[in-house]
Image 1 (tube, rainbow, N blue to C red):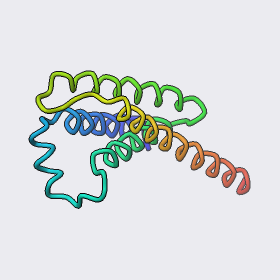
Image 2: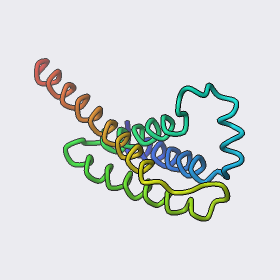
Image 3: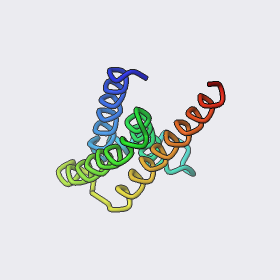
Length: 126
């Protein structure tokens, strides 16, 4: 993925995370009432979005970009939870930051595994 595509994807993911996190509680409840109730959709969605964010940032060069990807995820997770104090019907929770960071860590780990395998395959060919 080129740097411009990574930047655009990272920006789109951040907008999606902000939109989902700062949605009023009544809108969130209306959407979640239409979904299957057994799955915690909000938590799963945040895990996946932050996982994608971690993967997109870290896959540029996992050995150097994993820490910045996790710092970006931590700032975004903490910032969105802090902003929820002013959104009607929403409240900040530390468990949400943990879920977000677990997703980002999973994304960084996936990028590192893919990058290391790609490097091994490239060495075999050469």
